[in-house]
Amino acid sequence: MSSKLFICPYNAAHVMKITKAHHHVVNCRKANAHKNFVICSYNALHHYAPEDEAKHLETCSERIALIAATHVAYGMKSVVSGNLTMPPAAQLQFDDEDNWDSD
Image (cartoon, rainbow, N blue to C red):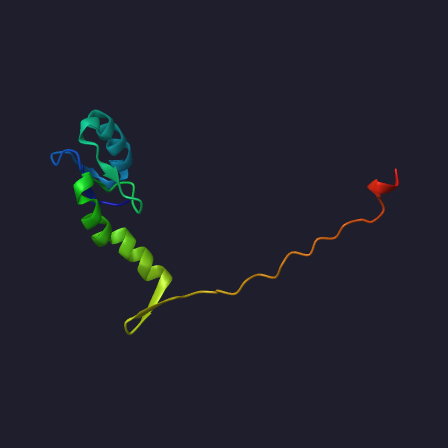
């Protein structure tokens, strides 16, 4: 069981276990609809003001972890890792028994 604590982005006085955070954020967002917070595309628990979007996306820990998991850095270059080969094209076979033009 995780003992990490989560601080609500809508009200810093709302502190809870991370396991309760998703349910809480949905309810708190409804109650604070006037704030028009943006939801991070990397982690649904990250809610922030629209003017903070560029800074958040630049420093988001989930984004950085995703990039680190999918790229290998060589010096100043970033190279995609993994199997990059294309699968062979599917071979479709048709029965020549039916001839629609002969009717």
